[in-house]
Length: 80
Image (cartoon, rainbow, N blue to C red; front, side, top):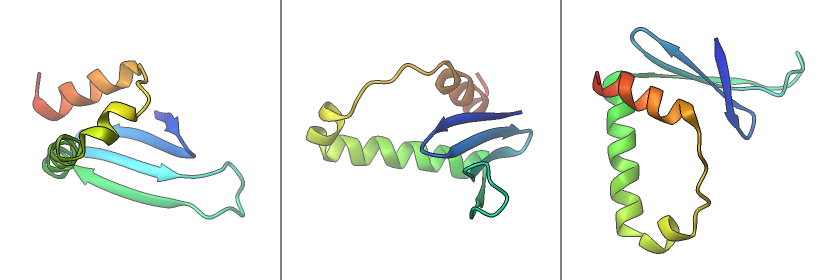
């Protein structure tokens, strides 16, 4: 099952990682697929944390969005 996460981006959780797709719903529109295995996903989230820490003004000004999928995805990536 794909979950819409915003800006025409969809997430699908797979046993061996995550698949991100971009699509607008029309067959003629461009689309992209990015597969992240769990190790790459963990590296990405760690990198985002470091970058946000280095640029605290960005982290403080970004909108807070509550998304129940965030906890589900984090749990899958860390095995919790």
